[in-house]
Image (cartoon, rainbow, N blue to C red; front, side, top):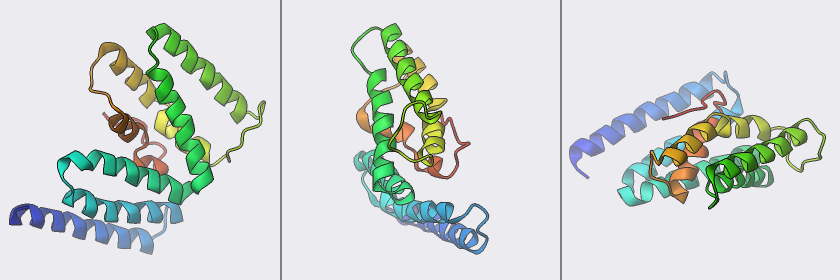
Length: 176
């Protein structure tokens, strides 16, 4: 790492620490933002030091850690499992129409769970985060899958859907 790059990273880290202190001083968004932002500050420093090949897996693991810290291990696991089911349905080795029907059917089950027609084992805190992660992004993802517009892989898909900002910014739906 060059001195110029180290200086840039130090400048960004100093800005992040100042933002952390502001968030702690003025708790407008509550404790959740403070916890997630603290994870992001530490994660930024580690991410910057990693080789490029390890950065995406680290980002995914950091995001998953944020999910567990914010929602707890059981609810966090439910969020990840539900999301992985949707991602898995999008990648089934069948026609695109069949995948869409299966995703819509799974969505119908989720709607029934949300409206308490079916009992579900996860808490209501999972719904807004799950919705923020998947509501619009899944449409873009399916479009890209159909048109082969992007490279796909497990780490890339998980990084796309389980982004750590969605834990506290639920109106942060699409990043492309």
